[in-house]
Image 1 (cartoon, rainbow, N blue to C red):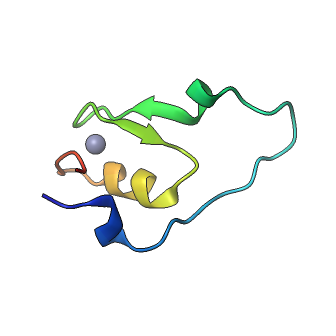
Image 2: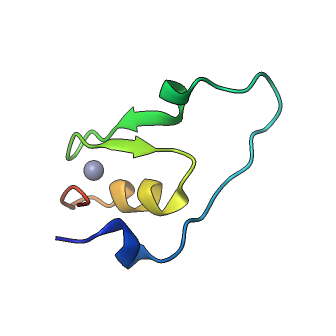
Length: 57
Ligand SMILES: [Zn+2]
């Protein structure tokens, strides 16, 4: 199983205006594996965009 740390250091984004989001707004659930994905971390987003993958540890 792939670990988040196997994907390298965090790749963080920046907000684009507006009010600071609530913590819950930073996450969505992957349609493939059902794991919660932190949209602020591009590593996680890219991992879960793969057609076939397993949840990260
Ligand atoms: Zn996934």
